[in-house]
Image 1 (spheres, rainbow, N blue to C red):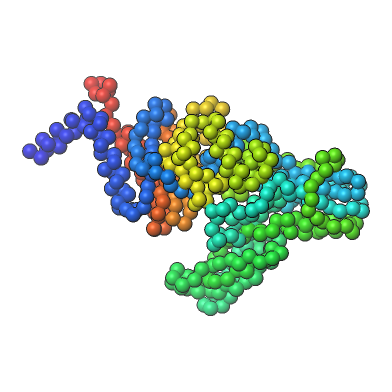
Image 2 (cartoon, one colour):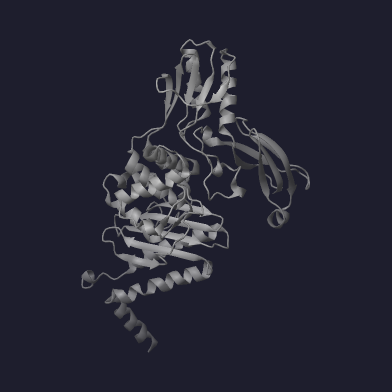
Length: 473
């Protein structure tokens, strides 16, 4: 009798795809209840070709999507600045003064900057009788987005976004724990030393680190950071990246050092100012093009790149490179080029602080616009992390049916996780999706795993759906 009931249900499901579809919410609800029952989760999954909604939950709920905001920054930049846009850093001269005009180029390295300065020597300039003026007027203060946490300041992912960016305004260090508990750790720079680090970190056991203390940073003047708190004892050095709080101070030090090493006599001042329009350009550094910058931003979820692009949009549209004008620019540009509902989008920056609020539905609307644009689709697909292959998805969905098929932007914050993008399968239905999770009260790895399982469940469910046209062979 029980076998007859089961067979009856299967036959009913086979000839009624609606009944089969009803199983999908049950499966996903079970996953959520098991792993994150108290979190708020918004999900939208649509067929990329037809627009059919495969699954939806809390799709119109305003949630903080963390770095999924970078999708909006990337789209606005591509629509407004064009794919071959570059940032330009210049060295110029007028009378006896020399001017360095910083553009907020996120890819400018210390080596690039030094090479720019070496053009003085190449142009047979052995003595500077005037001043060196640093023009940083393109980007306006404040240099941190409004939603950045105080606890994050001092770490590389919250490096200040000024017009002066050198080595992403960050510096790598290794921390070596002491052999005895209660003793100070050893902190060593990995390369250039543009920071002064005061070490007040002690070695503790894992239980103490988990429950009683943290590794914290106090920002002081002249690029001095005080590291204090604790680190658990471990066999291998811990690698960290620290932010340069004052990039302009760093640039001045590099200029002084480079001039001295190359025997260029300089008795003047290094000051801030603006470059006269009739100053003669001696040399310049051009960044990689916009598509390369966006690929780095999305694949590595680079906040500094996102902030620079946001400010560049602001300057291009309003002549004021600020965060506020950047958020305005992104919304204005996307409002003109897409069918986004701006009432469901609250943007304060382009990197993805917790002050941003967006519905999963609108993330999918944006992704759909990009997918349906023949010029945008190849650029955005190439730029997104690929499951098991690149960027922030390099270690996810490996050895599953989704490996190499998911192209998506990740998002992570203290209690937030998100994943939005595409499932591209030439042999099956391609999907556009957004999953945003707020209120994560477990390790973020739990939320990441849940995202992957939800996608796998949906794809497996679609694959198992009966195809009536093939029912009789």
